[in-house]
Image (cartoon, rainbow, N blue to C red; front, side):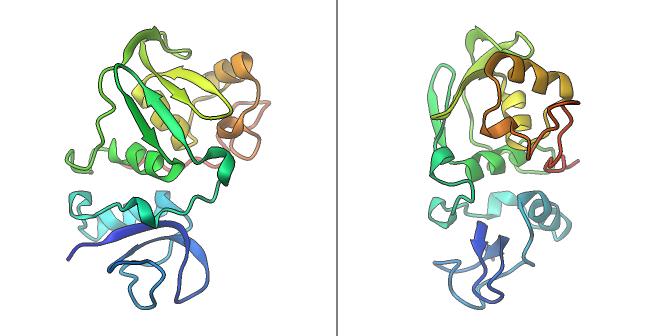
Length: 188
């Protein structure tokens, strides 16, 4: 059996918004849901792992994504030696694909980083660009940013250089301590 992931979509059976696995051409059809409805991917992915789903068997279909972030942040461009484009949900799925239990066949290669140093670590980096901010980050730093689990010192480096922008605003990080308020859990 194969499935697709609907992220932050309205479930046709319950009318609630969340992320879930479904089967068929559209997540909008009743009785196509294969998994419980979860608040976000951070809860869905562990359920998939616990129930022996392998992400290489899933088709993450871009047409199933409905971003809850709004039009302001629906396009993320990541450039190293090559450019890749993501929507926020696909980038978050990619951040979870970097975890150890996920098949490497699912991971979307970002390619080689540029020689430009990361703003956080100084290591070779990728350019992370939205219509609001342009950052230089390593692949793992991009994934921590997507999962909303930057370390406090990483938050403060970005805050000092760029001020507040969507990815680090006060719904996600405490401006006083730099601690993540709503991190997507890291899965091991």
